[in-house]
Length: 428
Ligand SMILES: *Cc1c(COP(=O)(O)O)cnc(C)c1O
Image (spheres, rainbow, N blue to C red):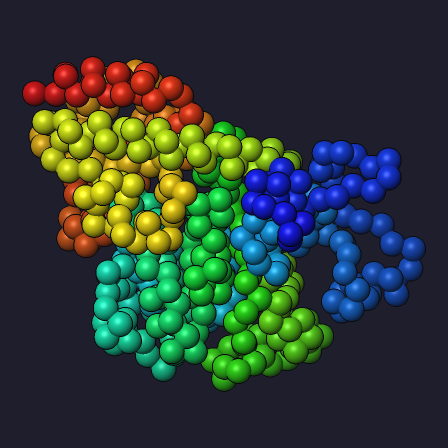
């Protein structure tokens, strides 16, 4: 599939049926797999042969869909996880352990912020947060000898800042560590971070990839380009024998192309078991088949709504990198030339209270803890997803208390704008 354009990969990537085999990806609804001899099965456990033995680690349905996502991102290997949270945790924990350190953009999803600043801190992994707009000097100053990864989001949820992927990648590489980019919002249709130097990409497939609000899921993709052995002292988990896996050294046995995902599957999926169900992987693939068609429409609707809001007297400001006046417009033109996403955020002049009145009066846009759905939805982050953050942390993450995040779906943009106009008319 690698020679085809992204539209073709969305539709047909990952799975090529043989003669007489199902045209659609089969759902392998089985926890386990049968072998004729113990020796056959032993080779799987030794990672000497590839194959399936237990769905807590791997399942063929998941692997077809993961292979499609790897093709879409231009990576060498991928895996599905039960959620985007699991994907980001696994991607980081695969190379960080107690005593290690992460450099992360402060402009990230609230769940990921909580994961790394609270839960991973309890595991002895510290994080230094940097502004997504940090200079090279500020980035360099955030690194320590024990730093193992840099993390950011291509388009941050919900702040909608755009990451300067090349700048963050070169900072990571100057310090001998990979850049992990959560590419949930643009999807590989809008941006492929590997083309700009990122090493690992993660996704909450719950969002646009599924696109129908049907299934929670995540994915991790490896570019296959990070040279683990060149920095072996930093990554003992990949570069020294794994005693829990018969003394295998992942970076030696599977090379740069396969080590990261193989270790993540063989160790973390085995031990934590955050696997996506094959049924959900099937739903995810249905979403992927139309991803390129849907993203264009989400972007068109997002742009139209952002332009309408910008001109409205009750709106203080609008964040949407497709607007020429947006601080991230130049980065968007570089990294997201075909459009960013359907998510627009804006602050009403009347603050938190006005946001409440506005949202209560919307008829098409439902109040939901969700984005990137075919149906338009909205949310006030400060009173919901980000309520664990202090006002100081909210300000630092670029999320004022009166901010409304609106995820423009696939409806008529004229209907969406009419709905927004009538709801704004109710605000004093
Ligand atoms: C939603 C989201 C996540 C978490 O994904 P879940 O599938 O909800 O676990 C991570 N990163 C970003 C950018 C998200 O939008």
